[in-house]
Image (cartoon, rainbow, N blue to C red; front, side, top):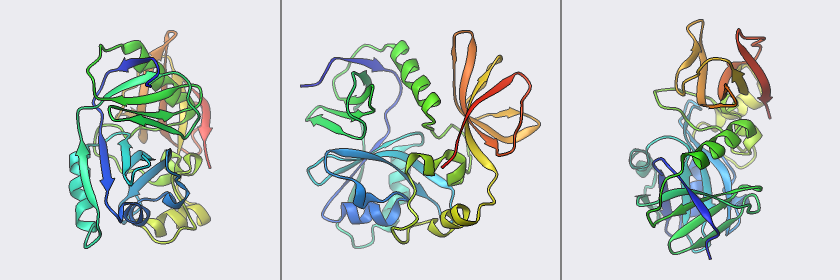
Length: 263
């Protein structure tokens, strides 16, 4: 039975990956090690382009019946499906952008686990849970803000609006466990490995607090065009944000760097 939940407004972007070769396809395309994903669980994962930039960021779930479900963190599911299909070739894989889900906040559920029934899917986040449910429910913006604030403080990024190219270190993919360096080839693998072993990329994920408003998808200031805000929310009279910053960025005027998220 679905535990008590509260609605979280906003569109839900999901992709269902099914067929006999679903896991093999995901293993070949995504940056995380799908072999480590057990049935009834979810993991962080991503899809990179050949230059190593993150095209999609997701919670990838194994629903336990041969289907994988990618709950996207930013981006457009139909467009992503269209981009993935040319890589199916002769594999027995079906890609479908799912619709009709509503996003809800729920009680605690063990981190990385999945609970599901025909009309709902719950993603365990430890002290709370995130649910997809088909039935229409009233919206509650307070729950949306609580989830977003928890994500910001935990260093859980969402791809922001706009045409941005982020390499894995900028989004903390190692910190999330969303990139593997030992599973073999996948798009962008060579670039991701080079950055991991040799370094050289100077952008990192950070949790900030600002006395002024920060806007998702926008640079923090004209003087720092590569410092992009991923998400921001006002709480207790201040703006808390998750942003991509220069690695050596020191004190910023009116902005406190609370935590940096490295590997």
